[in-house]
Length: 403
Ligand code: HAM
Image 1 (tube, rainbow, N blue to C red):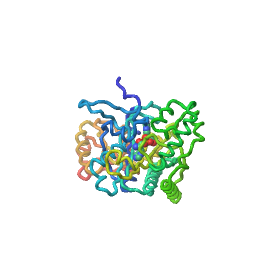
Image 2: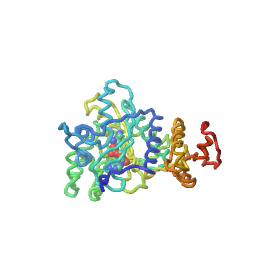
Image 3: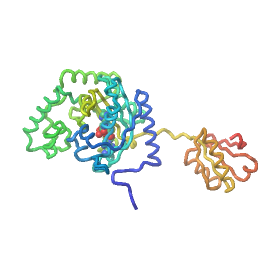
């Protein structure tokens, strides 16, 4: 039997309901915040991710589904959504047009990671990206939008917050950190030795206990911010405080993608095991320029839908629509005719196999139909239909013409 690839799941039945409920809720919230839908291709030039997510990141270094296509192009399945949206933004010349542009998207992302609970090779993200707003109020708004989505879904969270500084203060901090880590280089793990060469601040994120013990005394990013980054970070906290959004500051939160500056944040859940990050994002003011666009400030986040699906509190399912069935073979054609008419305005589920009343009722309950309709030889002769309201249990016999 052929099975799906490791780390790649089907979404159907109850999962599908959760998935669509999530997409609808998140899209509604994003629309209320003035964001518009964007869809970008699943396959992009590999160079796009190398230049944006960064060659030193695990995502680009180890996890890409990369191949040469029949036209000898080096391509890969997108590991995340931001790079493609930025590419589309520049390709459509929206960077040159100026102004504010706000997008949301959802779909599959691919990372060749070691699969485990909450960690897949094909997973789904819901993401938002805002271009053109050089104000920390936009960062706060993004965080509040993510918080609103989670609240509407009944999901509790902890919000972790950091500032990664900018071009003014980050290089100086990096030098301080490198100097500190090099002093204890003999005891750090191989990954950290590599990180020192490629992207030193990622050492702060190392899961190795010995490394973490050493880095406890490392210089803190938040103590090295320049005046403007410091001011923005203070304002961000003030806005969140005033709007009742609780957060924890984590000066070691560096994110796994290289394009961030200033605000970085992650939403985590304590109820889904070790893969606890349910959303992450931040400001990326230099990425548009990196990809050859006109410098444009930007900020965004993405949520991991599979991780959220475990946490969503679904609303009580409400009965809706019609179920139409026949009690004898002769009436099957009538089932189709009535269904087609009703489908112009309502949701209709049909059963094309003649069954007794009890079995049809079971079928109607399974699809949560509100109205249960049944026809047989008598109804053909009389031009009637039996309609039972499964919510208040009343029953009517009405003319088919009036159905
Ligand atoms: P990210 O933190 O790499 O950020 O991914 C966002 C979310 O996707 C994570 O918090 C997690 O819930 C989910 N996720 C990541 N990898 C997996 C996996 N292997 N299996 C299941 N879920 C996963 C980004 O991708 C950035 N593009 C976010 C962003 C948008 N920053 C600015 N704009």
